[in-house]
Amino acid sequence: MLTTRYEGNRTFSVSEVENESPAPGEVQIKVAYCGICGTDVHIYHGMMDKRVRTPQPIGHEMSGEIAALGEGVTGLRVGDKVVVRPLDNRGELPSDKGISHICKNLKFIGIDSPGAMQQYWNVPAFTIHTLKPATDLKLAALIEPLAVACHDVRLVELRAGETAVVLGGGPIGMLVAFVAKSTGARVVLSEVNPVRIEMARSWGFEVVNPTETDLKSYLEQETDGRLADVVFEVAGVQPAVDTMTEIAGLRGRIVVVAIHGQPRPVNLFQFFWKELKLIGARVYEPEDYEKAIELVTSNEYPFAELITEVRPLRDIQRAFEEIDLNPSGMKVLLDCQQ
Image (cartoon, rainbow, N blue to C red):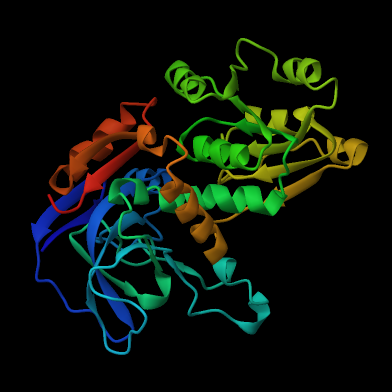
């Protein structure tokens, strides 16, 4: 079978290897598509070399079909269309309080162990979510990042009629905006990239470019001074951290979606003055995956337009190089059978 490996130093290799049968309790997946996410790009840039064992296939935003079942696996069938929730919690401890998706010894499959950027992938059976037979596997490759967005929106308990502001219109920010809109909330997206602004507006989103329009003043005028009920910080930059407390209204809720590798200054006075809540959000739980599957298969949202391009797995090196050159791009998929 064809496999790729991250070798370090911004380099991927492509090679033919023998296809190994799944071990007991595992499922072998014929991988259809694998998306390249921000974490994968960080790996490519060498920012996670202390965590990722090289050489190793990476990738976790995938879709495919079951090709083989390991001994003892029940409830699944060869040919089932599936996605993988790439969390291995087998190291969970009693002190983790049963919060499996963020337990101390959690292993993220595709980072801490081999990932989906290969033709066939063996994974623990408990990570599998099945799909309807008619599911488009290209769209299904968006289920993992969409589950992130579903988790963020669920944790903050966003309600119909509330005003939600999404700071950052990249792939995750756009997915958060879609999920927030599905609750019946009013969604305002803050983004500076002109291509992404036009893309969001074409999907019917209310968009503000904060370099041209003061976001707080805009919200004050549009909400009769109430400001935002919920703020999703997805940009991961200091200006967004500064903005999130300014635009949150009384008893507003702020969800930090972006990963901040370093401590950030935060205006704590605003939390006292307005009784704000700050919520951390990390990956997802099973119900978030099921919600993401429901949204993708409902065909109510233009998720296909988030796919910037599909490239053959053999072109993995060029795909990563070109992502760096295209800040307006959204989601690049690898066709893992080519």
